[in-house]
Image (cartoon, rainbow, N blue to C red):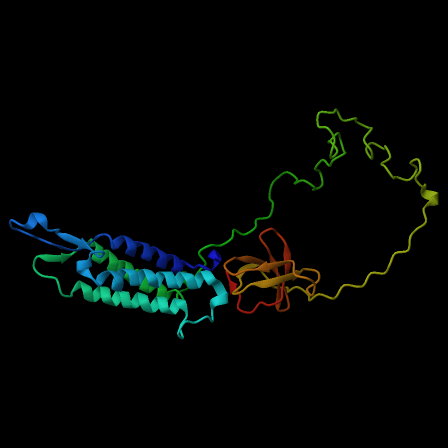
Length: 304
């Protein structure tokens, strides 16, 4: 299941289905009873009562089934975009079921079985409200931008802004320097200042002048193989400003210095990425871990 494919409209559909399920257990009809035999008669019934059939399957269960079809279509992601059942996609069947359940609920509120002493309970009205939200969110989700927004988004990567150098940066102690323990050394062993290999003028293992190692006069420069010149890259746009964007379908990210090389990552829908540079029609995008690469296919992207 692809949770990143869910939108805010899908969340509204799921919430309405939960309310509809709760409403089915609340009183649907209630009436006033006066007389000697009223003590043995229930004064309210919910949708699960057989006396109210077919209220349960035609209103409540039909609405819940509509929400299930819509969410199943979203969970399947772009792979099910063209998958149809009897000429319609699952979400289209869900919208039709939601509208049918809403239509039935409206007519049931004024249908037979009502009278001066009979009234619809809270379950009937909550079910109607839930179906209005369900049908409205299902039909408007593909059209309203606020409902099409992703429900789950990754937090954009924030560059390191601390005041102290990170491990590996200049100014940070390295293993084997200034008494910092060498990898594999006992941390309880006192460091030998001035006697560490490569520290304070002490020759490191394998350095020229060390016993068994050639001196500077014995070293013969090795020929350096000519490296192929890198392919020319398009010049960055002069008036480019970084912006956030999302892709409509998974797309590969090529290396920044070699756009024709093997992909180094993948951009997926439902996640915002930062465009840091433009090269012709391509963009240099930054992943959440700070990796940057070239996105060659920029068709259909959504700017933030």
